[in-house]
Length: 128
Image 1 (cartoon, one colour):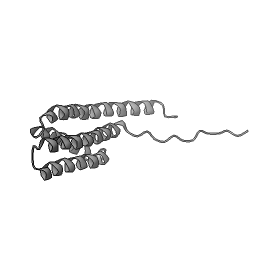
Image 2: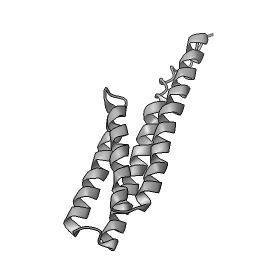
Image 3: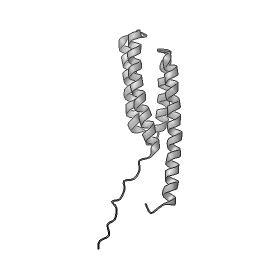
Image 4: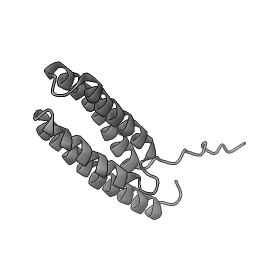
């Protein structure tokens, strides 16, 4: 009679990077669509609008891969301020950017809470 041991489970991925990455990816999409709006409203020369919007969207996507590393969350927070500042060109961005600032804060807070609770659970149940 052989005893079979269950396959070792893969370690859980921390929640904080997951939440913040998703927020930044969604925010990159927001910036792209806001760039389309700014282009349609002709708030600035076309090249300026697309350079600002495109570079910002690209930076947000790159930051999504960078969170969890030293300085990643700080850089993400600075990016929130940058996106919020687009309200100067498209006033609705103050509102929508503000929603993403709240989402960013909740992602950091809730992710840290989940990670802390997982660590407490794992410490209390070392067998599996």
